[in-house]
Image (cartoon, rainbow, N blue to C red):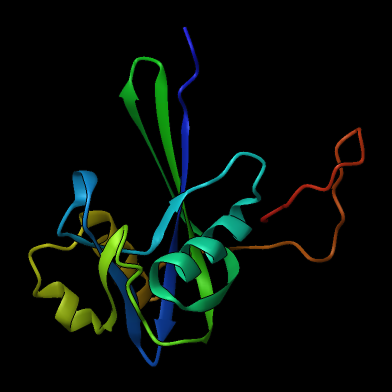
Length: 158
């Protein structure tokens, strides 16, 4: 039995009180608005994966600040799907869809998103939590330097 686990990342990007969303044009979320993100490449640190995904999907430069949500689900008896959502700092750029995975990218107010039917429920929950100041953030550790026994750097969010 092979291990088919999936690690995905999402990014909560807020600019002037509006939230960055992308509209997928493939797969289970086709024609739905969702927080930007995607699959972590083998060997890629999670915070770098979300920064890359937001740039690729929406043309926005960001920096990962901390983890605000983790969703886990079983897709099959041998597959766990783990999705880690980061609070991002907006750096620069205007939303522009990649035209491949997403066909639209833009910032929406919470009120606009609340009135839309084709927004992924988890994205709405995270945005509502942020807007109500109810999200706990596990910030990226920059004080301690944790290492594995082989001295390979690891990332710590505490």
